[in-house]
Amino acid sequence: MVSAVMSAAEPKAARRRDWLTNVNAWLLLLPAIVLLAAFTHYPILSTLYHSFFSLSRGGEADFVGLENYTYMLEDDVFWQVLRNNIVFALATVPTSIALALLMAVWVDKKIAGRSFLRLAFFTPTVLPMIAVANIWLFFYTPDYGLLDQFLKGLGFSGHNWLGDPSTVMSCLAVMVVWKEAGFFMIFYLAALQTIPPELKEAAEVEGAGRWYFFRRVTLPLLMPTTLFISINALINSFKLVDQLVIMTKGGPNNASSLLLYYIYEVAFTFQDTAFAATLTVTLITILAGVALTKFVYLDRRIHYQ
Amino acid sequence: MSEIVVNAVSKTWGGVGGVDRISFKADAGTLLVLLGPSGCGKSTTLRLIAGLEEVDSGTITIGGRDVTHLSPAQRNISMVFQSYALFPHLNVAENIIFGLRVRGVGRAERDTRLKKVADIVGLSNLLERKPSQLSGGQRQRVALGRAIIAEAPVCLMDEPLSNLDAKLRHEMRTEIRSLQQRLGMTMVYVTHDQTEAMTMADRVILMRDGHIEQNGAPHELYNEPASDFTARFIGTPPMNIISWQDDAVLGVRPEHVALVESDGIPATVKAVEYLGADSIVLCDVKGETVSVRQSGYCALPTGSQVALGWQNRHIHLFDRNSGKRRADSALNR
Ligand SMILES: Nc1ncnc2c1ncn2[C@@H]1O[C@H](COP(=O)(O)OP(=O)(O)O)[C@@H](O)[C@H]1O
Ligand SMILES: [Mg+2]
Image 1 (spheres, rainbow over the protein chains, first blue to last red):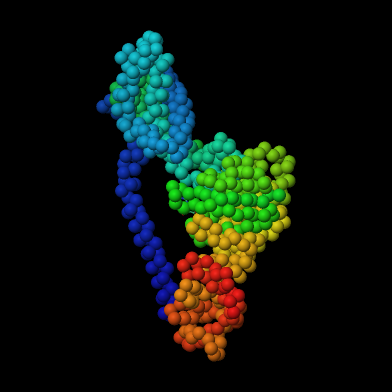
Image 2 (spheres, rainbow over the protein chains, first blue to last red):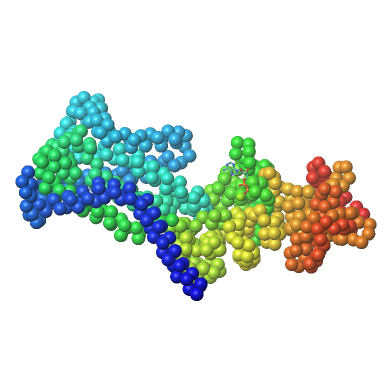
């Protein structure tokens, strides 16, 4: 009789404990959930919703189905900024990663002034993009700029670097690589320091040269970092457009405009929020695709320690 | 063949640590153990032989060839690290054949040698695993496999068993020893565990603070310790060292001390450690501890009064200041 009561009471108590644990966990998560929901999830859904409606301008917005999307596919500027963005990503992502790796390997060695070098490489990261853009604007200024003064010293004539559609993208890419590489270097540096020095010694005893060791051991062991950095760099190449506001405003003739900057123009200069919503959904889809590739495909093919 | 000769080799870091003018020889096909407490310079010595550290002075020859300034690869050696140093992204097979690949050995030969070595170290059905999927003992075997596949005449090991549990350690030490004999390798083996040294070695070099305290066969270190340091380091439990005359200390092994009826040195039992085959009776003699080995189970209660005795031929005398063995010791009856 007594034991029957006990056994009935016990699961009850356990269930109550479970319930309290759950409530506790949810309460702890609540602030983050509220912030994410209010400023990330709701805006995404709302943007998606608006991309299916016509521009309201005070009156009622009509449901137009995929009309905004068809319009987007027929918009030459959209295709141009998308192409620009892809070119920009292809130019900046591999270069900044390669440079970051090179710098990390260099400052990982026991050389004099190592801390100073690390700091020097990291400095561009600390600067705000707006400040960096202003500095480089001075470099690229026709005639007076650092670049032109240097070239003039060598006997070349001045060039409007940012005003020429054929050079503007390269100029911006160089600047972004300069700014980003130092940041990525820090990740590589941290990863390099987790590789035990005995691996190097074991390889040395087996007769592996430095290059062989780098190719067959260091590089594979850095793969998780490389993946992490590439995803970040790729996302940044779509996300970071501050420099355009300062340096080119997307010009000349949209030659340097990127997708996000175009969205900004459409939304706040042309006040076409419905089309801006459509472009935003497209951008989010691209970024989500990149992230998914990492989680679903690449993660499986890389060695994690 | 491939004997190793270390001649007056020194290595310090800004005057501290390292080793100071050490000389010794490892005969071809024998197992030499570098033994000593932590920080005495064993790893430094081994790394100097491997070429992973550059000597400050002195010379090293392997098989008659002066290798003092050669790179590790040119010395034709293999090495097993304490941490195993396995490549975490490569599977067992790739780890083992790493060196063959570096040297461009053809695929067919690689495969035959891998098969042979995997059989020897007992990893044949684990070749596809990554190191992270292996137990400590299995990782140890991979490191061993990588060391022997090169068929280098000299193999260097730095505390290879210190990360294993006691049972596995015992197993592996027998295996390494028989492998060394079967393959006829010259092996230099670093350990801080005197049992390991005594059981495996042809010759033991006991080190202390960067110099060699004693160099001899295991039984020489045990039966004729050159100093009280050696006497205290070798043996479980180590030799009893007690004050004797003004300028000397007396050493006697626990198994040579007997509990006697009369005429003995009075002592008080402090504790009894029962080990199964025998018991160690820890006695207090005028503030110094003397351990006595008794066979079987010993039921002396703590605090009981006993008398200790030993035969003169079993005693060792050491100089109190230098710690050096006295020439006349043990013979002085
Ligand atoms: N790379 C190094 N830099 C400075 N001191 C070192 C270095 N390697 C070893 N030492 C010093 O040399 C001494 C011997 O070290 P080691 O040979 O590693 O001892 P162990 O006998 O424990 O293997 C220690 O005092 C250690 O601090
Ligand atoms: Mg050591």
